[in-house]
Length: 237
Image 1 (tube, one colour):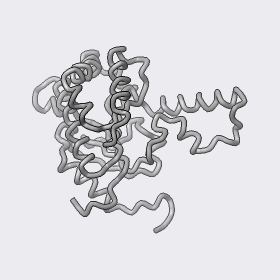
Image 2 (cartoon, one colour; image 1 turned 180 degrees about the vertical axis):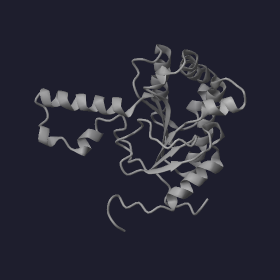
Image 3 (tube, one colour; image 1 turned 120 degrees about the vertical axis):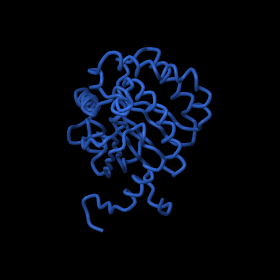
């Protein structure tokens, strides 16, 4: 990779292509999700080594509930099995683990694990790894709007005091740094209701590589593409 400068602070990823990866191997889609789950660890380690501070990954959307029940059940149950097997490694990784999205529709045992992981890793000092589960940007923005509207209704906020900064403080990603780079695997050229507000001035990188095949070499290609760009944020340099 090019010289270690201009490394993005906050990288987001859409992990796409698990099902197609499995189909190419004449295997069920759940096999692709299993491979994709382990790849999260690989890429998180690579990001940490590069000096990236925040990695936010789109794992399950608010629309993914419409997929076949067998696939949904696997995605909901797999983290529970992984947690029991790899708990000590997760805790000793020094990563800060966070989860954003709705929790009211997740299995209670999964919510308990999420809350435990957030508590056990909150004092860590390494990469902040955020997994977006039952997340959708429409839902996030709707939730933020309702919170702000309630403050106005209660007389605790004036309409003219609503600013972009205030809105950001009601998003799931409040206290996160600005998003620098979005990477989407599998060749799809769309955002899929992901971090719509946060993507305002982020750089976009699309690759045809399916998520289970996206390795450290492919990550370096994405970072080098980012490093070669001139980010003007609407101005001139």
